[in-house]
Length: 333
Image (tube, rainbow, N blue to C red; front, side, top):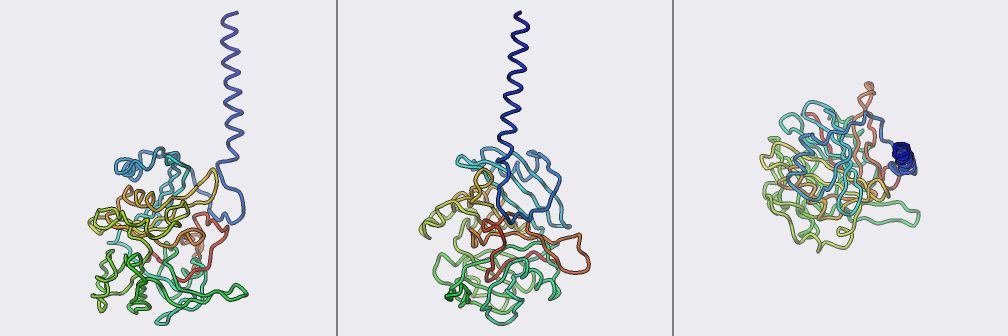
């Protein structure tokens, strides 16, 4: 009788656990449209080098539940990380770029060259234009912030970027709106990539080949920017995020998109959490780019060989890619 009672309790417990798993499984993925994420093998690899680095460098991440890692191209490793902070569930995409094998380029709507863009279009389209110009594109994300106007019919006209913006040696903007828009990722004509304040970058104007500024210095030379909260309440709230980081030896670039605004999947990060995450993955310098519905990461579709084709890897909070003013791409040298 005693043995029977233990067995009943055991099987009752199993049923309760099973029902709990079934009831919770529907919350693992967000609903809604616009999920263009391709299917991929799911692996739980919390012993990966990237995850161990994060756990050793920051206490932001309280739990890692799933990691997928793939080498997309020699010098390009993409990881997707499901993790928890003390506040919420998160999902991030980290492209680790070996700058000895790949390099950077900026993108424009409709592939404009040597002229200030006035129209917006999506990052998948901007990546196609860049590819068709002769650059083989592997990753692209959204870029910076703009002064613009919106017509009564909703059409957006770009006026000027709020940060530095160079494309293929041409300075589309050598102006920045204020100190918060100073931090800039740039590449010189000899192929060197760095992150610095705009006032230093413009001193090297003759050498600059690509440059894209953002809103908010997250980390500069290994030091967190304690003043970033002064930028505005938007950056202090949790939202989808896009950021670029650079290792101390300037050999590895980190291209990051964090999903958000999706309950029980990814809430998004505030600006301080984003700085912590960028430090965790290995950044010595890092800059914040446009976020919210603009945050997007697209990857080259390796299954299409006869033309340039790109797939959206993350889950934009708008449901579909948003048309924006510029972008940042990883390309072959």
